[in-house]
Length: 374
Image 1 (cartoon, rainbow, N blue to C red):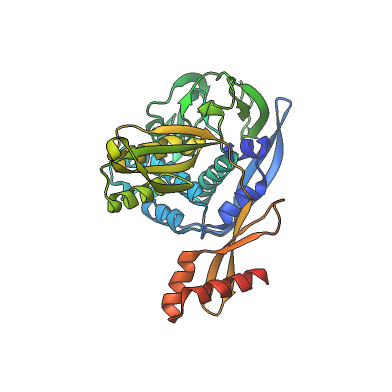
Image 2 (image 1 turned 120 degrees about the vertical axis):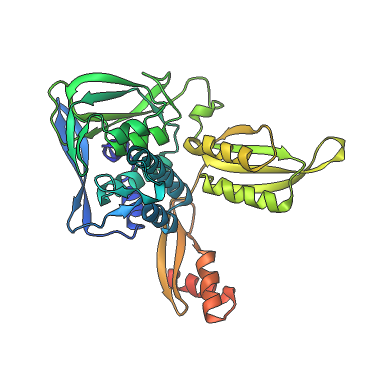
């Protein structure tokens, strides 16, 4: 329902398809459709499984997301959502996070849900504000037996999230849905103060007796001008530090990327009394700004930082794989109405191929560029 609502909002289906295609999973296909709920025409999104799927552990899923050629912010967000889900399952079953076996939530449809939702949210680049969540009652049959509603893993995912009871024997919030919204939302309100712009409806499969089975997503802007952090699509997070070694600065930059930064850098500056120092900074999509800020404070000696709202114009980009004499090389192609496409081979792939074949890396880069240009 999350992906369906975001598609209905206007996220291109290609955003979801490209993210899912980057994963080493198969035996399914995606279907976008429509459904009528209480006179509202909503978008539906289904994952049709065509072949048996293996049971996956949290460790195997996290490793798969880390290794997949996803855009870094999409991979970071998807891994954060799955970690939230994994920690909830580990708490319920009293086992180590790495040992969690996903059954209902570990099937291919949940992987698609989480990666697709992460890709859509990164594509929009907006802050996510959630409403309090309705909790149904009753019981549901699961792999481990009969479970109470709301499901234990869903409740564990929703620590700190406002909820309210509903007099309905139905599962209204699944563990996967709980993990997605709790990882995405920066805060929860009944209705935030903002100007709605676009509305999307995602349809669930069941008919509920007292309400339409829909998830509504509203995209809008805060009042108060473009300087508002909440209305900015991206944020620069930065801090000045005068007691950081080069090794620690390099480690901090790696941590910023791991937290979801789109770019990160260090620039030399001179502070008061002529002290040499560094500005450690990162660019992040607004939903990831808090996580990036946390990483900056955790990994440096700074006791404070700045958040600067910015707008970002970027070329649409895609990643393809080309065959060369040195093996398969991933290539990033940036397009759009900005002149000829920019084509850039992934340097890590080129460097690895150069080491394997004992040639200069520039030769592998040239071969990949030639293959990409056809």
